[in-house]
Length: 441
Image (cartoon, rainbow, N blue to C red; front, side, top):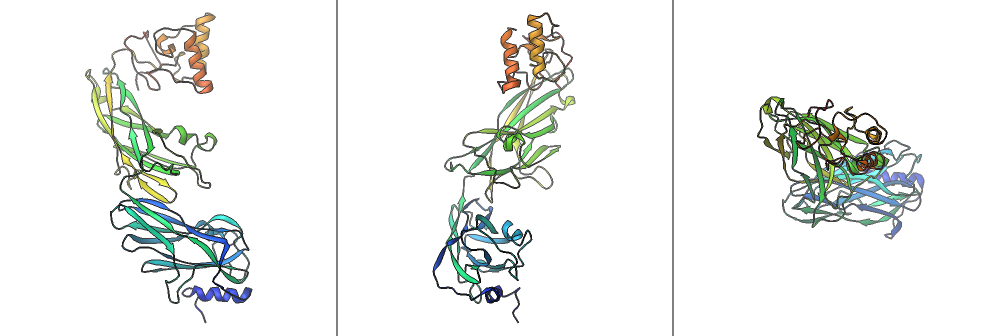
C-alpha cells in the first residue's frame, strides 16, 4: 500500500488510474506554463520567490515540481504553499500537499482533490508556492533558480495532471540578483522649527521621503514598506506619525489597507501594506514625501533658551520591540533601504506665535477662514485678533489675493499658507498683537 505522505508520485499515478490512463509523451503542452519570479536581494539578505502557474487548457487535478538552486550562493530556508494551493479545493487547501527538501533544491506534489471533486481552472498567476532563500556569499552577482527533474528517488518531474493524464508545462527559471547598492533611499529634509523660550513649547514637523536609485532605475513595483526613525528624547517627544502624499491617496483616497504605527520614547515606527487583496503598487522615480511625523518640544529643556538648539533625527533599525527594519517590499523581496539622516534646528521665537491661515482664530484652519477674510475686507465683518494669520502668502500685504489663495487651498488643493503653517510659529515683522489660538504647542 502506497504512503501518500512520502510518495506523492505514486499518488499521481493513483489519480491518473482513477481518472483515466496516464501518459507522458515528452512533448511540452503550451497551454500550461510554470515560472519562478525574478527578485533582488541585498548582500547577506533574504528573498521570497513566487512559483506561479498560467493555465489556458483543461482543468488541472494536480501537479508536481522539482526546483533547484546553487547551494554555493543561496540557502533554502522555507517552502510555503501559495495562495492558490491554499484555496484551490473549493476555498480549502488541496487534499494532498507533500514538500521535500533535498541538497540543492526541493520537490513537491499536489493533488487538488483525491476523488476529483475540485480542480484548478484557467487563469494566470496562480500562486503555487513561495520559496525563501538567503544570500550566502555577500558578493554581488546573479544566481538562477530553475525547475529540474533529477531530485528525489525516484526523480520528481515537473508536470501537471489534466483529465487523468500528465502534461509537461513550459518552464521558466527565475533569477536572484544580489545587489550591493540598495535600490531605494530613505531621506529626511532638514527642518526649522520654532519654540517659545518663555515656556519652552514648540512643534516640529518632519517629512520622510523615498526614491529609487540608479543604477536600479527599473521602476520597481513597491507594494509595502516599513520605517524606524529615531530622535533625541531629551529635546523632542513624538506626537503622531502618518502616511501622506501618494501613499495616503491610494485606493481612491482611502489609503493603504494596513498602516501600523507606534510612538516610542526614542523614536517612531511605521509599517504599511498598500493592499491585502490586489496588486496595488507605487513607483518612486523622484524623491517623494510619504510619511509625516509631528513632535512637540520637551519644554523643560528649552525654557529660557534664547539661542536655539540643533538636534539630529535619523532612520534606525533598532526602534521598537521587536525592532522595525527600514525595508521596501518589491514583489516577494524585502529590500533594505539606504538611510540618510537630517537635523531639526530649534529656533527661539520672541514674537507672538500664530498659525497662518487661521483667520478666525478657532485653531482649525479651513474654508471658513477665507469667508471670514472676505467679510472683513468687503462687508465690514469683524477683524481678526491676529491679522497676520489672514496674510495667506506672508507678504505683509493683506488683500483679496489672500482670501483667494486660502479658498483655493481648501477647495482645489492649491498651495498651503506660508509659514508658520501647519504648526504655530512667530514672525517678528507680522501684525499680530494677540493670538489666542495657540502658543507654539
